[in-house]
Picture 1: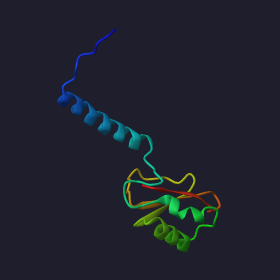
Picture 2: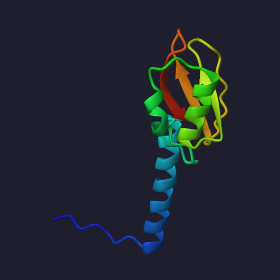
Picture 3: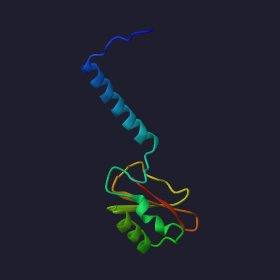
Picture 4: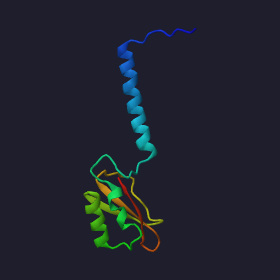
Length: 105
């Protein structure tokens, strides 16, 4: 039978901290867009608008429903900035301006 040496509690705590930080960063890096980012935005609250034709008024309604501070429209093939704002709602549209979904970030 193999006996493992005991690990000092300070080392155990250090390893736990490193793993939690590492895994948290890796999870965000893998999914920079989120349905519920760390801010107050909750994209799923605007899902009742999916399938509707986008208008500025619908965008405002989605912003209020999701509790976002601002929103940005994402159209196909349009350039997109790399900045992330956890309190911003991103509205995904198709070629005909039909709402496909919502993301926070």
